[in-house]
Amino acid sequence: MSAPTPRRTFLGRLSLPERRYLTDALRTETVGGVLLLVAAVVALVWANTPLKESYAAIRDFHFGPAALGLDLSVQHWAADGLLAIFFFVAGVELKRELVAGELRDPRAAALPVVAAVCGMAAPALVYALVNTIGGGTLDGWAVPTATDIAFALAVLAVIGTSLPSALRAFLLTLAVVDDLLAILIIAIFFTSDLNFLALGGAFAGLVVFWVLLRKGVRGWYVYVPLALVIWGLMYNSGVHATIAGVAMGLMLRCTTREGEEHSPGERVEHLIRPLSAGLAVPLFALFAAGVTLSGRAMTDVFTHPAPLGVLLGLVVGKAVGVFGGTWLTARFTKARLNPDLRWPDVFALATLAGIGFTVSLLIDELAFAGDATLTDEVKAAILMGSLIAAVLASILLKLRVRHYQALCAEEDRDEDHDGIPDVYEQDNPAYHLRMAEMYERKAAEHRERARLAGASRDEGDRPA
Image (cartoon, rainbow, N blue to C red; front, side, top):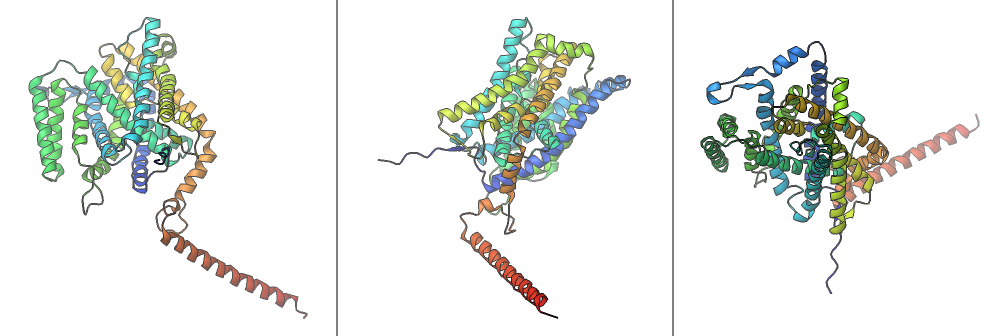
């Protein structure tokens, strides 16, 4: 008889290279998330003070080459231009996850993929149910489906909660799949009348981009102008321009070859991620989050079906969808939860996924284009829903903060000071020999101290 297949551990320890990549990526995203929070607060204050007319004037100011179809407002440039950088990084992340990360193993990928799909389907269903019962519009079904990883990490940074690497990796992988599905939603459901000539030009540009990458051509002065041309053609084709960003990101090679410490995709992502997290996304938030928060506007969030559907989708739909998808997948694949964690930890993470800011605001502007009042109401619902989800997640995570801190301390412990956490060296004989030598030195030192202490006491006990 063949031996039974061992049960796979869900939320188990990451490999050392994956942990290092995760730490580097989330460090940048956390800083960017704090900047995102600051930008959102500035936008809200700016739009709700006597200076609100200057905010509207800057946001609606148009510039750009009209002959190329690019005479856009500042807000439009931020949504279509700057977010293309964000989606480029998302494309690189997705490519890396598929070839070298958590998504390369179909069995391991099943859980975050199903969790992300359920985490998008449930909010859409909640929105549809609320608006069907309340007689609202179904146009905004996609608004509450997105998770904002930068905002979520900023919340973790603000409340001072350190999550174990397995939970952070699950959150990042969930957000990567979430971004991919959001991109597909934008491409399929928010594409206007197609200009096939411009679309063909964008496709030709992407082919040139791919060929240059495969030929090993280097130099930002080659790729940046080409990327701008591809972006402009994609914008004029009727397909949302951010699709150009993710398409180029997916083309980068994210596997290492002999003699390479990092793949080209990882190197480019390392350079571009700070630009995305520290500039592009905060600027988008600055010109997208400025809504008037009057008492009536806040009341409308809870009384009008469209904004109420978005709020409940983020707060209830996300938590139920992510947790339910995770639990069901683990149940039917017989995956075993990491014994250091509990299912309430997963539910807290699912609640944190209800923070849907950047992409939700983008989809809001696409879904309700032409209806400024409803757009602003839904923006207020996104802000309110994200805030409620953040507060609930903070409370749930704080209940286990000491446990998380102990797990993180154990993950980071490096007693032999070789730069590699001890948990990754338990099968390394050299590590145990180094530790034995260290403890032998310490034992010898304490024996010498004991001898000196005994000699000193004997001298003190002698009669004068």
